[in-house]
Image (cartoon, rainbow, N blue to C red):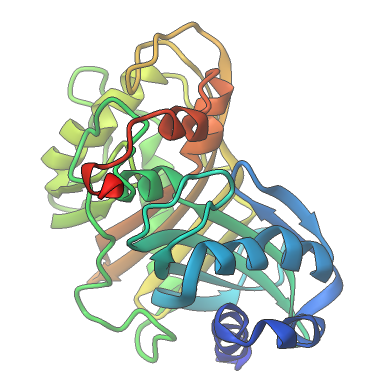
Length: 335
């Protein structure tokens, strides 16, 4: 394994915590001059180190005072997709005291864990391309102003892997882990409209372990075992978007017992049944997706999922940030 994983890991942790005066010099070393960063809504495309500084790093550091990264997964390998390149991918939390607005989201004044999924293409020890999904709806939830009417599963902080070995893994077969994930992805598109099952997912020969854990973004939440996954996510999603087509991935990597895939967007679909309180109207939608997996013995044990629901709901005509900001503040905010 080449060292580009640890180089990128060090760069990203330094950028979030270094003195602000050092950031322009550090960014010049860490990013290529023509780098592009695609960040979930409402940030979108940033081009060049200065745009990344002003459009992402400085707002994040200003909103979360004394911000730090807490990486749960950080893996890397050559990209299996045709786009190629050396990529790293992470599940992380940006933590700090949420004392100033972030991309329009009103602060809570309390500790916050902003979860993020991230993919970075590394060239010559510098980051040339980035895709980042910030779970802003979950940040709103933590601030006491959840903009969605309910959640299908359990809303909770993303846990790290049960094996506690997700950062720069040193053991396991990354190619085999990605093979397992690709076998699962290949069977997901055809499903039983009554049970919402797909062949080769569970049971003998299935790709999911019977005790699988699935950790989803705000609005979906987390669930346990296949029956929990179907009840708390799969059924509602497939009823709403029965014609969804996914797998349009620019990156698929495997490292140790882990694999990660992402599409920008990954899914295309039409809105055919009510979802998260929104009335279906048949409109065409797209969805940006990041999935991170831990495998063991040829099966998927854990799956962390980041989805750009801020952008998805905007396509439905809903501004989640404005809706959240219009809610009454938490009771303790007035004290």
